[in-house]
Length: 238
Ligand code: BJW
Image (tube, rainbow, N blue to C red):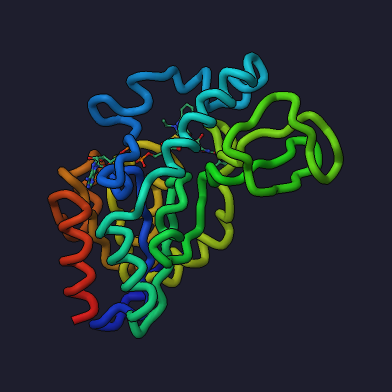
């Protein structure tokens, strides 16, 4: 289908995709930067369904440590600015995050967590979702059905991200699409810029440095998110 050709001067609907770079200055590590999570852990062991089936205790240990770290983290100026944009912008602002921390919510925003949430557990047998305890263990029973098949509510490689139908509708209606602090190396999120472009949205990337997908965006804004995002939000609200 062709994309609509006319879009308003001031974007009516803004769709924002965030990644680990937004939470970096809150002390939560990114994945692929120097010293990132995937330089210390084998993702096949800790972030795939096969890895969990082979050694659930190891995967729980990994997420228990990540959960403890996230519980002590505070939102930074980028989270705050995005929450302000969502509250004050006269149009619609949809926040989609790949992050499993709850820092957007801690700053007062609402976000779609397409890769799940660290502070939630789920049951592989019945699909129930509940607030995760700080420490999870392989023998934990599901509070709904009792099965000992509980896991973090995290989307691992090879699993289908959450709320993709809702996200597709938002991308279709976007006038402005922004990707903030994401390397653009993980699909389907990495494909959102092309999807939004196809539907006629203007696109902007805010990142420490241009990502591998930089050429797909209409505009580039560099620098740490705690500085670039508040300035960008001021521009949109101003
Ligand atoms: C700053 C900053 C600062 C730093 N300020 N910026 C080939 C083989 C096998 C699979 C595939 C394949 N090709 C494609 C796939 C699919 C696969 C995939 O993409 N793999 C690639 C690695 C190749 N994707 C999947 O499997 C997904 N599912 C799927 O495709 O299902 C099939 C399907 C889809 C749709 C319809 C029907 C079917 C699932 C992906 C799940 C990803 N899960 C993870 C881990 C779980 C969460 C967790 O444990 O925390 O999610 S992986 C990890 O990467 C995490 C993140 O959400 C995700 C994205 O990372 P992000 O956020 O971009 O972080 P970084 O570190 O990469 O980048 C940080 C950026 O910030 C950098 O650019 C820095 O410069 C910047 N930065 N400091 C501003 N201060």
